[in-house]
Amino acid sequence: MSTRIDPVLKQLDVELPASPAATLRLTELLAQEDTSVPEVAEVIEGDLALASAVVRTVNSAMFGILRRVETVAEAVMYLGMREVAAITLELGLRTRFPPSPTMTRLWDQARLRGLLMGRTAVTLGLHAWRAQSAGLFAQSGQAVLCLHAPNAYPALLAREGGQIADLLAAEAAAFGVSHEVLGASLCRAWGLAAEVADFVHDRPLPPERWAGRQQPVRAMLALGAVADTLIAVEDGAPTQEVVQATAQQVAPVAGIDAEDLAQAAWQHWERVGTAAAAGD
Image (tube, rainbow, N blue to C red; front, side, top):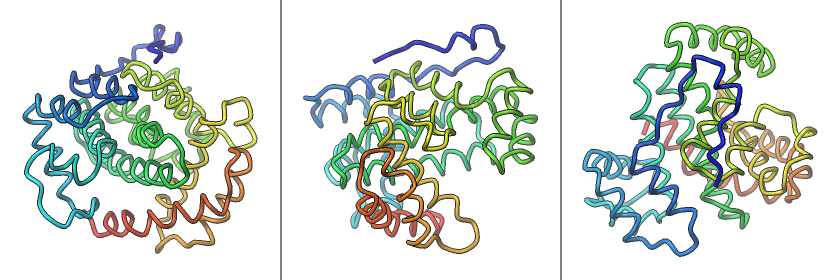
């Protein structure tokens, strides 16, 4: 696990928020192969406010639990260790950034993207924890810029957010750094796997530029591209044809089957996307 921070940040007046102790410990635990459910529950329950928020979030309709859970241990039993840890990681992120309409939108999208990537990874036999945490941190660099420039950055995002190349250029011109560099550095600072940081850094790139990355990173980039296609649809509901078109573009580069990718992502979207559209 790398904690290397991009050298460019040392020359800029942009600070990365520190990870809450509970989330830092969780990332350490989830990096181990033999982590137990009681260990995860104990870390979360050690922070009462965080534990309460986790239980409240788990009880939302997005997660589809048929009975109300009262404890973190129950949440882990019903949802599994990975998804409860991901909820905790998301809530840890939210606590480090002051709420605003832009922040709320970023974290709501992060939760949905993380769920889609994590569950699709399970279906495809990929590393689900890394995929889900990659989805959570995909736009974290934008959150850092919101924290750094709470008025200027949302305005820039509204003005330049339509095309990713235009956005990156505008960020670099205004702040000396673009969000993918900040997001990758935040991943390293919070102790996430190097593959997650690489995903966040390369997410703005087109598929033809993924070739230099290892296959696990390319697979996460493909999952992220399909998840972003589903999330980005604004006029009406996304269609399977749109998802299949994206999967056919990115899956060959990632070394995974396009039909399997499209089918798995669509299957999980039908559950979590419906709940998100309902506002849960």
